[in-house]
Every structure is written in C-alpha cells, then in structure tokens.
Image 1: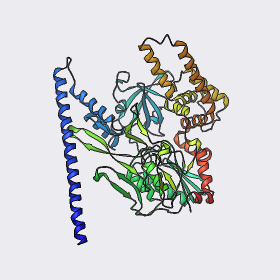
Image 2: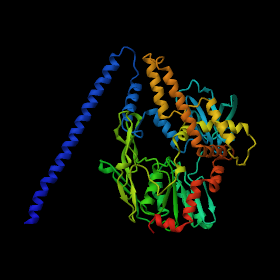
Image 3: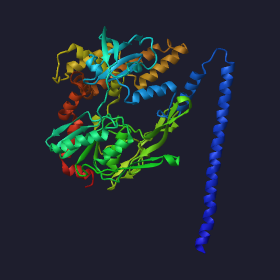
Image 4: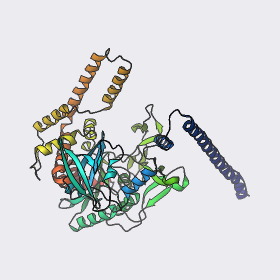
Length: 545
C-alpha cells in the first residue's frame, strides 16, 4: 500500500516537471522567433529606406559579431572569408614562415623567428617590420596580412622589411612548420628531469611521454613539468598527459552546462608511465585551459605539487558549429571542472560591472574543496599553486613593459649595438638599466596603466568641453606625479625587469633553446622546484603523504 501511494504521488510531480520544461522551451522558442522577426523587419526596412546605399553583408557581419561580444570573448562568428582563413591556419595542407608575428598600430612585426625555419633561413630577425609582401604594400593593406604569407610548399615570397630604419629585401621559401609541443627537456641535476610543454597539440602527450621515458632512462627520479606560458589546446591531450602519471580510469575533468548533452566526464584510459615519481608542475598567469586541467587534476588527485602563481582561469569550453552559406559559429557550450569540483573559469561574463567588464569572484567569496587526501583547495578561477612564488607573478609596471613592447624594443636596439655576443650570457648592470630607462624616456614610452588611461579619457573629455585650458596646471601636476610614480616602480621592480631583459637578449642570440638551457641552471622557479623535490619531507608534507 505504501509503495502504491509513493508511486501515486511521484507520477504527478514528474509529469509536472516535464510540463514545466516543455512550457519553458515553448516560451524560449516564442521569444527567439519574436526577436528574429523584429530584427528581420528592421534590417529590411533600414536597407530599403536609408539615405545612402548600404552593404547588407557588412552590416549583418558587424551586427552578429557585436552581438556575440556581449556574451564572452570566445563565442565568435566566422563569415565565409573567416572560415577559409581558419582552415588555412589549421590544416596541414598549408605552410608558413616559422615565426611569431604581430600586427600592432598597423605594423607587421617579427616577434620571434624559430630556428631553421623559413623566416630564420631568410635572415629575418626579431624586431624587423615587414612593409611589403610580394607586390602588396602593407601600408595600403588593412586585412589580415599574415594570410599573404601562406602558400604551398617551396613557394617563394619576396619580402621587403625595415630594420633599424633601413629597407632590406629577402625571399622566403615556404615549408611545413611543425612546432614541437615539447621544445626542450633536460636534467637539471643528477636525479631531476625538466620538461617544457609549450602547447597541447596533437603530439603533446606523445612528445611528453618520450621526454619522460628518456629522462627516466638517463637516471631521472623526479620530474618538473613546466606549463608556464602554455595557452592550452586539445582537451584529449590534457587527459592523456595526466594519464602518464595516474592509472587508467581516473576522472580528470568534467564539463557542465544547462544543456544535458554537453555534460561530459573525461577519464584516463591508458596504461601510465609512472604513478610514483615525484612531480612538480610550474604554472603562471599565462597557463590556461588545458594547462589548468593538467595542473588542477594532478593537484586534486594529490599526484603533483603545483608551484608558481595562480593560472589564467580559462575554463569555458567551445565547439564550432557549421551554419548556412559556408559560415560558422564557435560557441561556448560548457565549463570545465576539476576532479574536486572546482570551476576553472575566472571571469563571470554573465555578470558585468558598470563599465561592461566581466566580474571576477572576490577572494572572500571563494569556495573550499577537498583533494582526494583531504587537502583544502579553493575555486575563484584558475589553479592556485600549493607553493606560491612571488617572482612568478609580474608587477603591474613589468606587465605594461611586456604588453607595450618596452623590453622587446630595447633589446632590438641592444642586439644591433652588440652584434658579436654569440653564446655568451651578459650581465645586465646598473649602467645597462639606466640606459634602459633612458631609452623608455627617449621613446616616450606609454605605460598605459589604468590610471594613465583614465587621465587620457579625462583630457579628451576636457578638450571636447573646452575646459582643458582651465585645468592645464592641475593636469600637468598629475602627469608629473604619474611620471614620478612610473620611475619609482621601475626602480622598485628593477630585479624582475632585468631578468626579462636578459631572457629576451638570450633569445635573440641563442633562440628559445638557449633560453631553456639557461633556465635549467639559473631560473629561480626551477631552482625552487628542484629544491622542493630534493626535500622529500617537505614534498610529502604538502601532499599529506
């Protein structure tokens, strides 16, 4: 009788739940249909009645892209031309020049040529400004100029570039560019192996496994896995890399969404390489996405000690979906969660402040979670290290120098003033640092801190309202105070800025490989990770072993 009553009361509740979901879906569908009809009517009306001739394709392209900007930076619309470019960038049928390039203020700059790839073979150096590709002058070309550097294998592209004010010519011969996920591995002492994992491409787990096995064969009994600066990549490779250190069947990450089909659990499925070898993972503020999955999962499973600074906090999952007429949308479908239940995502794009910026969870509102052995870890976005290092997190003034190329441009000048450096490691003296500060001043370097940006906006508003003359003295006093503050910060953070200057110098003469080699003996984070691994008592204490 009790069972019968139980069923009797459950059925209406379930039916009611289904009715609610159905009604909710119908209401959403009606609202979507209503808004589409309003937009379509408006779009037709404007195009048919506007005083000048319109371009419907351009209007729609901007409308869609601006609409998606209200959601998050990762939900993106690709028109037909964008899709073609995306395919060029992501298939093996196309080749490249083997260099990191950037377009800033209309200039196409070589940031880093990779050793023995086309740009390097053609003699291009960091700091070179490409001004012409083939017959196309970049001063007149407003589209994505990097697409002009694509083509079939062995295709020749004539390049005109500026170097230290002089115009030069060279010819690029394109070839397949297969950048390694593990660009470097080595032993930092007799028993400690060091692996740099720079990206999660299709070969990431294979290359990491090969490096791990080679280091173990060479006598490594402890491992440092360096994920600093790694922006992420393929989710499956993140799971497989965790699998090198944990058994098959372990939950590594889950994805959660309000749409049931996007809820997934990803587990290891292979035989591990070594489930006992002591492991330290290095992370920083540029370790994102798949890097955070690896660090977070191995931290939650008490398999590794995470060292450095809180990671970036990119925990939103995207999926590309094909649309009509060859277009596509990459849409955020879910969020990543570590095995303990922590959400990796830092910024809440559903809630924004008065300036339209996504809100970050305040530290006082962080939620505590437990690792497998009961250690307390917190959410709040990104992965909080077990051992935080002050030197891993850059100061605001240093971030500004990196972002606005202050260090990069200074080292470009340094490189050409010291052409015969070779593989020597220089010392950045106080005199060098004084020269660096003078360079910034001579170049009228804009730090563009939040305070300075606010000042610029205030000045622009004052000019519009024609009151700038009335506040001229006060503004000058504020500008002078800001300049003194910048000088104070440059002196205060001299040590960390000197380190970054030296890093950039080593890259210019010895490429990235030389920098990694230098790191194995001189980088403070690697030294501290090595010291921790060489102190089993401290290492085991952190992991509650």
